[in-house]
Image (cartoon, rainbow, N blue to C red; front, side):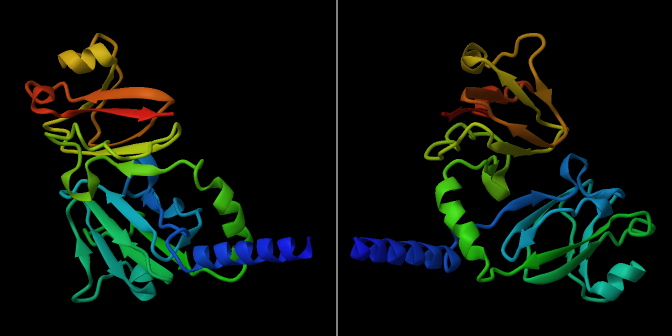
Amino acid sequence: MAEGRSMSAIVVVSLCMLVLCSDMAHAALFVVGGRDGWTTTVSSWTAQVYKAGDKLLFYYDPKKHNVVVVDQGGYNSCTAPAGAKTYNTGHDYIQLQKGSSYFISSIPGDCQAGTKVSVTGRGISATMVVLCMLGLFSEMTHAATYVVGGHIGGWAFNITSWPDGKNFKAGDTLVFNYNPQYHNVVIVDESGYNSCSAPAGSKTYQSGHDSITIASGTTYFICTNAGHCGAKMKMAVTAP
């Protein structure tokens, strides 16, 4: 009996060490500012726990804002030194390092109005062992975030096969990135999916960066702009 307990302890410790030394302490994706995105109200958004390796996703209108990585001095003074790393695509992915990272918009007056944020990425410590133990049992049930079409393609034509091979669960979040001047996201039933038509009252999204939580069963998404669904800008996602 004692030997059995010893073996169990070895297994438990080994699993915890595996968690601490691998990506099972997995990186998370955070949409900066939540539904409001990277705006003048973003400085109050950071009441969350981040770790090194997590990714921040910045959504904004590139005609009005940008994202610049600065040091604490630049953050406090709203100034970006020459050569500061600058992003301006409107949907930028930035991976966090350990320690504090500082981001501002360098558009005149933007940072002073509140378009800046500081985020601290924590390393993994020995105290994570207990959390890793719990994680071994909860990993398969927690909600995940998926960027539809990946970080580059987004919600676009020929997206139909993107869900293949993915293990979605009820409560997972799908993030749709697209140009709202050309596309939208509409939730339909199976008939609407097959016929590329949306009945009156269908739930429609058109912000260009929509976060949609999926329910149990199969959820059908199409773009209703002329010809787009027929060009395979549609997909079905099934969650147990």
